Image (cartoon, rainbow, N blue to C red; front, side, top):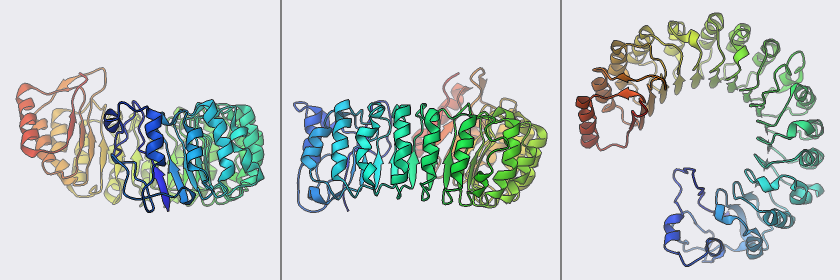
Length: 502
């Protein structure tokens, strides 16, 4: 497949593994950004592809008529060049993938794009995310889709869409019979026109991913969406997160949510869920037997009413990720979760951070930690852990039951004494797959490292893939600072010790 992909460069954003173009731009100071961009993009060579992730063109050619994929995302210097680009690349009637995310498209670019899409009858994926000029102009961009389209993926994240844009999308959905991925996240006006969109979703029977994060949804929105759920019987991912007015919407309503038998990901974090919502979800979530990821985090009212819900998670044997951090869990709810987690053999990610009831009660999770052969991420930040908790954790680690752990977060637990940290650090060497460790102190505190720091350095020498150790606000005495310097010089490894901030 012929493909052009530009390196994704945006000021202020790190893009690991992508070659910064400013290195080459320095060598071309006599050339305007956009002119150079077009020369690179539209230059020719002799076979099947252009590789613009390196310093120069490859020795191969792209015939424009064979181009199937074009990715110009995260390139600010594409701004204002779309009309020239479409002229150079005309015709592109075999194009299947077009990604223009975060290109700072201008009004002229948006108008040009509408005309260019008329020449792409084979288009299957279109991403215009993070381009605010799309807002208010969506009908001009997607008018050609009104005649029917092969589009499978449509991403319009944070495009400043208006309610009129939302109404247009709602009427457009029945004509997108191939649509599988639909993302309208971070468009706050969508909530006001959701009735039309929900009606359109009833015709999107092939939809596999629906993402409406931070779209200004309300209690009424859940009732509207519930009417569409019966038609979305192949839906795999449902993201309704960060809609703070959603709270109360699930009460006595979402009967059709249980019909999503193929649902694998349900994200309801930061939705202000009420006790009534939790009661309703208690009847629904355990029926989603294929669920792999559940995010209920940052819903403070969940903590006092989730005992029955958490107990019934045992009926989700495929669950891989459970995020229930910042839910103000109470002791009974945590105990119910601990009992249910024993029946989650596929669990890979567990986040219990910012639930104070975990402190002094980690032993309730002991059996789960012993049985979790696939656990990769364990986050217990700000859980009021005490020394006995980390001693228990060290015992589990020593016994080899957390051998697959890659990320361990024990930050903001200031109640652990030096002896506890020492025992933990002495046993970290058994976590051969560990890449990240966080034992930072709270922002309001600082403390001298004890002798356990030497044990930590010793353990790190036996951890072959560790890259990052966060220990902010721990003060390293001069003697141990020299130990760290010697370690860095002797082992020549790329390990980031972050111990600033005190």
